Every structure is written in structure tokens, then in C-alpha cells.
Length: 387
Ligand code: SF4
Image (cartoon, rainbow, N blue to C red):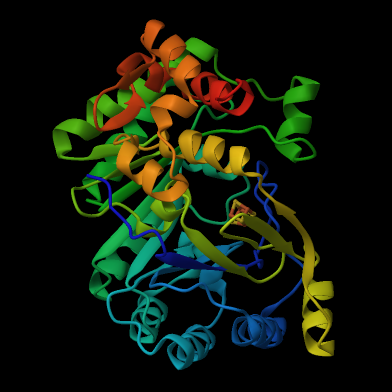
């Protein structure tokens, strides 16, 4: 099941850039040299940015603390920020409020305090269920910490939680991945995000792969890993509602879905991206620069772009196709006052001919075959001519 949003529903993303150590594969905007003494000033800057922001009209449906490692920030700072949200939107009632956490940074008291602060969804970065893989990725936690974090989350009364895992790691075997999936499922998460390892330029991982010190699994093996996710998760009631995301019915992440339905989001913090109407903008990436600019009352916006009408329609299509439910045609029409069948007539006909999409009276969505080559399908919507 996918969520149907109103056109003007929007989400709030808060970037917390602090980490204890840098994982070998990570190219996110994070810093490891700033300790807890810097957190209050950073959260102060984030709060200021929030208080000064022009809010989209419509309903705020989700707040997502992402990173970095948001669970490193003390719960009272999260609570204080959420109080500032209440001061502008009235109440947190009904909102999905997610906090990303590293299993090596939490305990029962801390998770209970996050819950008390208003967090009602926890995303736990498990990544692998073998200590040697976690160590190779420079994760700061072991497998035992993952089990403990889940226990504590449940004891703290956080009823909705996600586990992140990565497949296609150097030296990863299909058996290990199956073991990871089974271990994850045994923890009964509401939601699972399963990502294929991306080798990002400039990371220690990329360097190791380039030098031949790290060997990635063959493409066919990685494809098998994706298939095994379906084989293990589907009988347990999980539905793949998006390419990388699985959930028990009704536990799909609201926040992620806002991105794929082209709804607005406001990003706060260093390097955070925002999107509203036809405009996308982002803040200063440097954490110290961001804090200094905010303290000095200077603009923290580093850049922006305006999407043409055509670009908006194209993005709407390929983002929407990431969802299992696809693009609802009446939604497209509601937003653009055009018919998707007319605008993308040639592309749809071509992809249908290849058996990669299903185009019925109500929706356009990826077929089972298309699901396996989704990025290939998306490229058509980015590059093809439109009417
Ligand atoms: S904990 Fe997350 S954000 Fe921090 S370095 Fe590791 S992958 Fe990156």
C-alpha cells in the first residue's frame, strides 16, 4: 500500500552531520571531529533557520532527523527543536517523527528520552549481521549492539522501527546475505531499507576497489541477493513498496514517500536540500560555515535551481515509478493539468513494447521485468522527447 498525499502535504528534514567515525563507503555530509560540545550551537542554528523559514502552505506530515548520526545529539536538544516546530505549526499530533540512529550510540534511557521528546519512529542502521563485515565497513558497532538497540527501542515504547542493511559488500556471499535477511526479520521490524552498496568516488571503499584490495561480488550474485530479499521478506508479510524499501502494511515511511510523490520538503541544517513548487535549494555544506552564517544572520543558502515545466513532469514520472503503485494518472493531471499518456506517449508506448511498464487506465507502473532494470527505465523519462 502506498500513501495518497494531498498535493500540498509537506515534510521537514533536519540534517544532523555528526558521526563518531566515518564508514568506508560513506560520502554523506558528515563530520567526525566535532564533539557533543558543538551540538547545542548547531541545533540553535537549525532552530533559527526553522524559525526564519517561509513554510509551505498545507499540512506538515513528517519530520525526519537524518545524518550523520542524529542519535548522538542529546534528547533534550531534539525536544527543544520540536518545541520550536510546535510554536509554528501548533502541534505534533499525527506526525511521523523519525530519528536515524547508530546502534553503537544508544541505550535504553536515551531511546526512552527520544520517545519522550516526540520521536515515534526509529531508523536503526544495522547494515550487516556479520561482525567481520561491520568491521570492514568501519562501523562503530557489532551485531550484538544491533540486537540490543532493537530490544531497547521496544522497551522504550518506540513501536515503529526500521532497519537499514546493505548488500553487495566486498566479499559478500549469497549465504551471508540470506543470513542477514533472516536475522533482520527475526527482529520483527516494521520497515526495512535494503540498499545495494554504492561505490562513491573519494571514499576508502572506492580506493580499495580501485587498488584491487576489495573485491565486489559479481553482478549476477548481486541480482540474486535482491531476489532473495523478496523470497525471504514476502512470506513474512513485507511488501516492497519502493525499490529499496519494504514494510508491513501501513508501516510505509511517510517521509520517503513525500520525495517520490513530488511533494514539498523543507531541509534544515548543513547541506540540506529543500524543494517546493518548481524550486530546489540547498544550504551551506560546511558545518562550521553553516553555523557561523546562521549566527551572523547571513543567508545559509548555497545554491538553487528552478525546474522548467517539462523537467517537473519528467521528475514526477520517474520518481513516481520508484513506488510499486507507480504514478496515478489523475494525480499527474491534477498537478500539471496535462495527461501523462499524451505528454509521454512515445516513451510509454516504447517501454510497454519492451514489457518494462504496465500502463492501464489508472496508473503507470513498472512491470516485474521493469522492476529489475528500473534505472534503465527512468533514463527514458529523463532523456526522451515529450509532447
Ligand atoms: S554512521 Fe552513517 S552517516 Fe555516519 S559515516 Fe557511517 S554511514 Fe556515514
